[in-house]
Each structure stands twice: as C-alpha cells, then as structure tokens.
Length: 223
Image 1 (cartoon, rainbow, N blue to C red):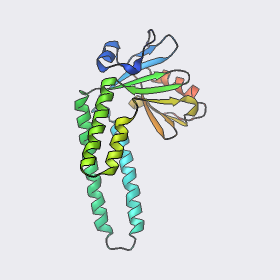
Image 2 (cartoon, helix red, strand yellow):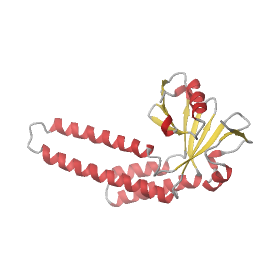
Image 3 (cartoon, rainbow, N blue to C red):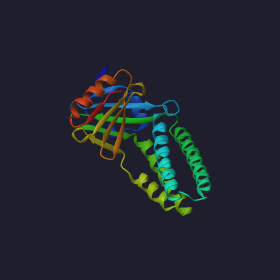
Image 4 (tube, one colour):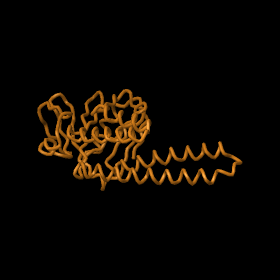
C-alpha cells in the first residue's frame, strides 16, 4: 500500500476541484499521524448505497404490511389495503431511482467521500460544493412538501438541509464493525449511526486493521 506524506491540511474544506488536484483514491498521512483519503464513487457502478436504501424501504414496508394484517384480521378490506400499499411501495421505488439518477447527474457522475482517520476515531464529510448541492436538494424537497401539505416531508427535508457536513465515529463508542471487501466498504456503527467507510483499492487490509484494533468495545464481523 502506498501512503503519501503531506503537511497538515483541512480535508473537510476541500472543493471537488481541489480534491481532484490533490489526488483521488490515495491515502495521505499528515504530520500528526492522521490518515486521509478521498474516495471517488461512480454511483451508477457502485450500487451499495442504493441497495442499503432499498433494504430500509423494504423493511419499513414489511412492518407496515404486518401491522395492517394484524389490524384488519378477518376484515374483507385486506386485499384492497394491500393493493394500495403495493402501489405506494412502487411509487416510492420509482422516486428513489429517479433521485439517484438526478444526484448522479448533478454530481457529474462522481460522488466525493472524504475520510479522516486517527487513533481516536474517524470523520466522514463531502466536498464543500457537493455538500451544498445536497443541502439545496433537501431544501427544495422541503419546499415542495410544504406546498403539498406534507408535514413529514417538510421536517425531513429541513433536517437534511440543516445537517452538518461531517459525521464522526469515536472508536471507543463503536458497537460493531462489519466488512464488505468486495465492495471496498467497512461499516462502522455507533448508536443510531451507520457510517459507510469506502476505502481505495489496495488499502482495505490496512484500514480494516487500523479500525478494528481501536474499536475495543465493538463486535467485529469480517467480510
């Protein structure tokens, strides 16, 4: 594995243009021992995020169906209700697929994921310009939901628009670490937070060992 030494640099404030100039899918080591890398994901080639979203939607839908079956047990309306739920599920899937296509277009086919890792934990962020695009999409979603009287959509969209650009996972608070080597992916999970850590080719073993050796309270699931 090749590691490039650099001076201290604020990776969390990089634009996409600056990230490309610095180097994509390369591990950098700063003077203080922090390891950084910028993972460039082709969203239409790497479908791990889409599969994760689909699993969440399917789980929620399954819970709704089970609840409806229990509440309408013995009622003649069950087939009608299941048909409506099926239509809603199909509509949501179409919206999700369209959203991924739109985001891929807005990000010009490349999604920049920035990771900073030291002995205490790991931080994930986007490049500043892509973070702004994400925030703008969320704000537009909230505005459309408000116009349609969808309170849930307003709350969700507003929350997404106001969320920070970085997420941190302290190794001592990590509950589980799960590997997916074929997808260059390591899940680092804390309470109510699931951090998807994508690593460049050839660096998986190094990053996996670095994380798992420091997550002393976590369940380790190799993959």
